[in-house]
Each structure stands twice: as C-alpha cells, then as structure tokens.
Image 1: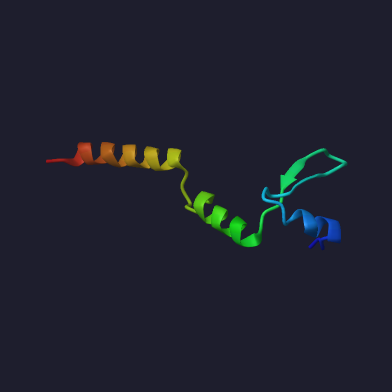
Image 2: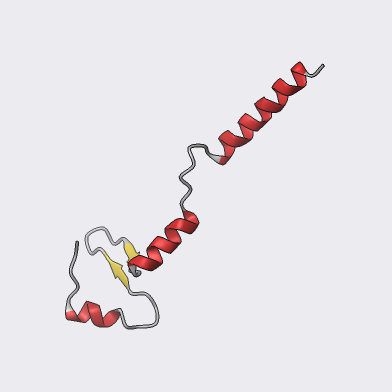
Length: 71
C-alpha cells in the first residue's frame, strides 16, 4: 500500500478526484475513496460463471431440445 504525502493528501480535498500518472509508463489513473470503488465494483462487476453470449447459446440449445421432444 502507498502512503500519501502531505501534498497528495491536500489534493484529495479538491472537488474532482485526483488524477495521477505513472512517469515510467505514462499510464493515467484516477484516485477514488475505497467506499466509492466498492460501490462501483458492485454495480459493474459480474461474477456469474456465464457470459451473455454463453447464456444466449444455452437458451437457444434448450429451445431446440424442447422443440424436438414435444409430443
């Protein structure tokens, strides 16, 4: 874990989330509070074992099987 300097801590008081850059890779990051990150993760993270495409294919296959065995 990285500990903030006084200057970095002061940047956290700004209205916008602070943005940081890795000087070696030039990759940019946005620093958000842990509770904000957790809420975003809950909204965006899908931990289901199936992708949308896989679920669509399974539904299609199930429909085809039902069509074959209807009396």
